Length: 344
Ligand code: KG4
Ligand code: ZN
Image (cartoon, rainbow, N blue to C red; front, side, top):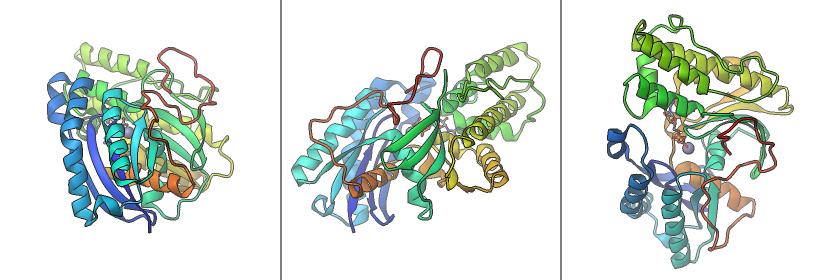
């Protein structure tokens, strides 16, 4: 069975994992950088890149040891080659190139979004193509029709902020700490979702896209009014995001004929309210619902190793001069959504 070593370093997690072509996770190591970024309330690219340099190789060695493998036993080396913070992406990709050269094993340059998109097939062997995927992370909010490995049709994207970005900004506005998503979810549990009236941008719109910037501004106004407890704002905000995700996903279902399942992936897929709402929507449409375990939703290297395994099986490997890419759309043919600051 093939064994893939995967590296991830596109944001603020450094990770290395070994995964087999038949879905065995032999090892996965991860080092977060929350403490380094916390004083700034967000990820500082330069600090992130330096931290990746320091910990990536020790993590690779630890993962190989956990798996009981030498580098020579590995069949290919996969690394995130974009999109992401370019300094960190370069650290991971250059490391993978060096390992590939030293071990004389193929290099696989993985699109981080493809890592998220295929991760549900690592945890669920039954999940077959095609499927409708809601990819919700800190940098992206997209609906994709996943037809096969390397075959993605983007049905919707955000015209401003990503859903995870909205969670992070809300946490910052409410003083709930960093990283924001889990903090908002925890605060929301102690609050009531119907106490603070907040907008649902683009709900019911004929166009397919997402928007969260107006919601963030409304959170700021609610906070500054002094009329609401932070827990109630958090709960009302989370409900507004869930309503938007559900409405837009429902809208996309009409364009996802033949889909075998509704799938959610990316960091925001770790949110309990989001998972519960999507499971209900899938049930209403007689579709299977698939969500990876929480640790596989947020950034990790097992999903990169797995995407590498899928790509290797499909016959894709990459040359050693392949470049790191800060932007890298999964569906390059997708039309631009209206508005400024469009995410790839
Ligand atoms: O996929 P990911 O780990 O990194 C990116 O590729 O962006 O996603 C990180 C995002 C952050 O915005 C974080 O706040 C959000 O996922 N997130 C959550 C939860 N856990 C992580 N958002 C809502 N609820 C959560 N439990
Ligand atoms: Zn991610």
